[in-house]
Length: 319
Image 1 (cartoon, one colour):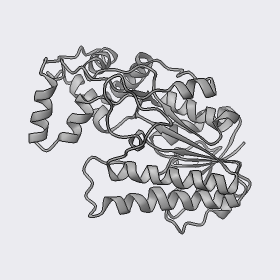
Image 2 (image 1 turned 90 degrees about the horizontal axis):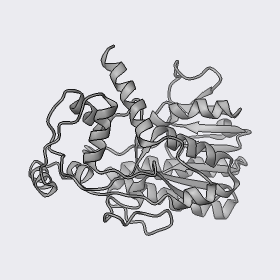
Image 3 (image 1 turned 120 degrees about the vertical axis):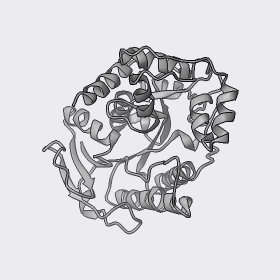
């Protein structure tokens, strides 16, 4: 299969290349600058960016599938004066520009990596988000992803190009950044952490599991015009996650049993309310549709994925 991949040098995209090549797919990667570390079998093609006037015609020639990973990514503290306008420019207008040209070029399937933020920011414990349930995004990033989804579905109905939407939860794996990396650093240093009594539940997805689902969605006929949620299939409290991550790092977690309400109150007072929500609140997803419609099961367990992530982290500490 001929596949055009955007975001090939990112955290997910760089991990997706080897499995696609292993399945004998031909990959054209749209890049803003040539990457020396990409597999030489990947055809790198330069683009100016993800603007609404980017010409994709040459790159789309003979392509059967587009996997669109590139985006203006979510950041905790956005310095832009109008974040929603910036997210819309790339994540909505840029995405739909690519999709319209893909449909015109005869692309059969467009796989869009969206975000669980389309569903919302949190769930009541035991009441997970579902793929076809209500969507109530609250921040500019989530709103932009929802609007892109809506535009893609409309385009699919007008053109016949199949659209597949995947909404990952927090993705972790070797090379992970942001809050997950911070937690590994805390554990590795042996710092006492005030998260010993957090009884929330959060769905996570290992990089290998997300990649496996994306590969499945490039090939499975039942994926056409569907939306899927993806996770590891095991939801963890922050307390449990830190303990199991500590095991993966060979650094038993030193956790103090501070009540969640006190953590949230303190974090809010320090202007870190969003971080407190991620550490103390629940966000669960139901992947039943993904399992049943595609016959898909996460190939990696949480502990296998944490072990792999921890091993990579420890190797980097010795370099």
